[in-house]
Image (cartoon, rainbow, N blue to C red; front, side, top):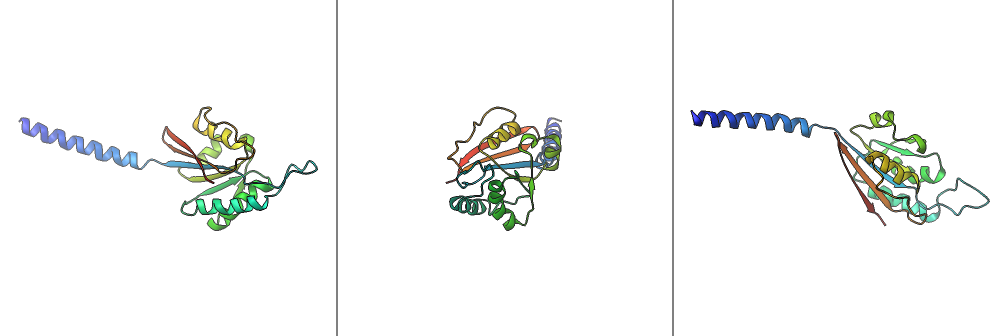
Length: 171
């Protein structure tokens, strides 16, 4: 009788683990990659919308290489030359249309739902990129990026209620 109980218990445990592992493994994972725009031309005469500098164009090409093996679903950028030009080489390579977003209202329920289970790149600014990372992870963890820093890559994974995040420096 004890042997039969052990067999039934083992079979039940196996079925429970198998069925639940399928559910766990089948959960959607949403991945956000957040970067700041590349180097911009010096601001002159109050121009608040400069293009990328020569160095910035080289960095945009570098981002294309960094994401070469990443399967992106969506690319978002603010409506400034520097962010659009940072996203453009990668978007062209991946054949993805860059979607313009309002940095003051990006991580809203509609945006979250639209990108659930997807891999997303968001190109922002020194103040909006860490602010967005903080909003996604639900806590104040990252500080504003220094004006002379351009190689930070925020990676955020969301699976059910579990959120993991890391910050890399790509130079």
